[in-house]
View (cartoon, rainbow, N blue to C red):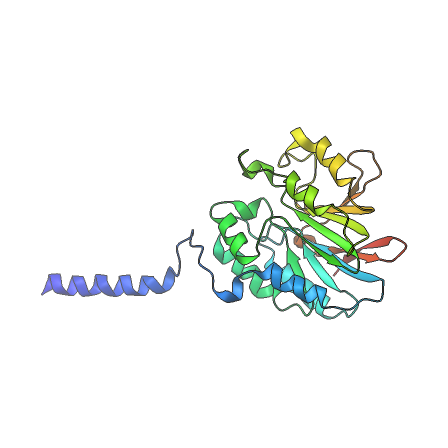
Amino acid sequence: MIKRDLYLILLTIILHACDVFEYHPYDTKLGNEYENINKREIEKIKNKSSSGTFKFAFMGDTQRFYDETEKFIDHINGRSDIDFIIHGGDVSDFGLKKEFIWLEDRMKRLKIPYVTLCGNHDVLGSGIEIYSTMYGPLNFSFVYNRVKFICLNTNALEFDYSTPVPDFDFMLEEIKPTDDYDRTIFVMHVPPGDIEFNNNVKMTFAYQIKQSQNLLFCLHAHTHTFAINDYFDDGTLYYGCDSMQKRSYLLFTVTPEGYDYELVHF
């Protein structure tokens, strides 16, 4: 009788524990709601209309800063002049599925489209599989109002040399002139010169991006600090954004003649 009672108690504990431990930390299964988000959002961007001048917000490094991210979303939803948002990466801290879902459950409240790059923290553990399922390819691009945004995986330290980071073949294909765009903006998580970047090829990288059509500027996250740098003294400016912890983002206004930017606090 005692053994039977102990067995029932143990079974009860195990069944209740199943409610506590909902998933394995390296689980990568996602429902349709959380798959191919960048593709879906890019279609929304393409379907938006623009009169020639448009605005987009650039932010990044939302890891752990969920309250600040919610305030950012409320702030953006209170505006009516921004066409889309680019998240510069580091959705997660440890590459866990739950972290990706926590962030996405907040971002999907946005009233405007958004795309999300992969950060160096996002490829930890099973993060690369989760990111790829949730958002899509690590390198991607889209065109809006004749401006091409080329979004790159630059998290070289997290990959071995069998994976090209940055992927020059992808870049060469993307910078080919086509009829649908006139100007180019490069977006990445890790900037050149950072320990996470493959600095063995940084001069080749600098040369290649300059071959794109009318390069306007480059964007990066990762450093958690607002900064403007001309890393190669070649006139190409790299704009870095604060982490979401600092409750700020960069707002770019792109006109037919050029662009302007603003550091916005909320």
